[in-house]
Image 1 (cartoon, rainbow, N blue to C red):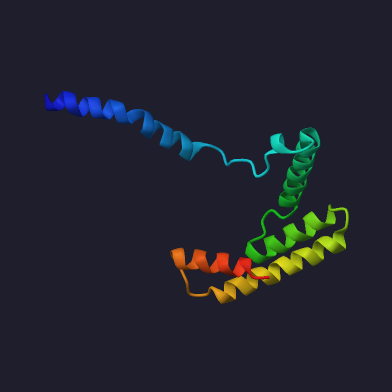
Image 2 (tube, rainbow, N blue to C red; image 1 turned 180 degrees about the vertical axis):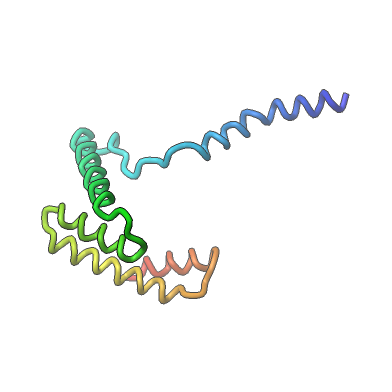
Length: 124
């Protein structure tokens, strides 16, 4: 009787367990949902162009580590943009903001860190 009950419980739980396993293997969700855009076709083209630019930059920056890779990726991506100078300026501004958040939240971990980062991002 107990074996039957355990088998029934395992059988009932197996779809939920399989769904969790499939979710863990699933590819990352797309950042942009072009189906909701005003012009889905143009949106898809922009996304494809951005992915191609990122792949080209990643190939150019292969073998570099950490800060060097980040700087290389920024240079490569900005070089491909319509206005490279404006792109570089935005990137430097974003880096400055990121460093400011890191400094403000130094030494915090877990939920305290998440809350601090969220709070710092809300500040203008």
